Length: 139
Image (cartoon, rainbow, N blue to C red; front, side, top):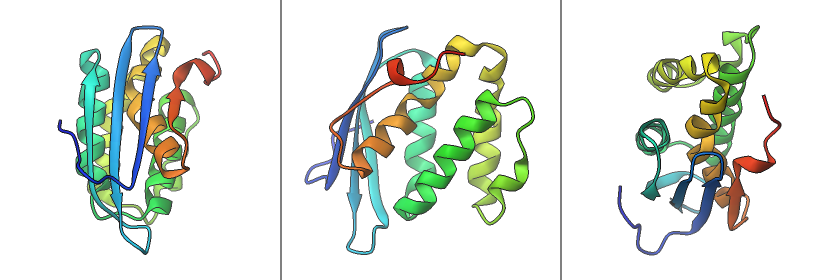
């Protein structure tokens, strides 16, 4: 939970359903590897916990690995028939942490809380300045 000076990518994330607002900062090296990541903002416990876990999980990963983890995590939280094989080749510790948050599937309104930081990270990597869970398909 900090401002990252000289971030190479950053985006503002908003979950209008419960008022979560985050700023995600990333430092990518020339090869697209995340050398540092941080966030600031306010939100519910799920949103803040997910953002904090995300910053720990993504350090040292490539932007492609980050995208794969995000997509898998999102589907894990939204699909009843999710195939854990989608995480094959991913950091096992990262996957284990993400599985802990996947219980939000039982409370669909909370999926947006758990995935906000991840949506925002992906927006930052894609060069977008804003991310909103409002654009996510309702569950």
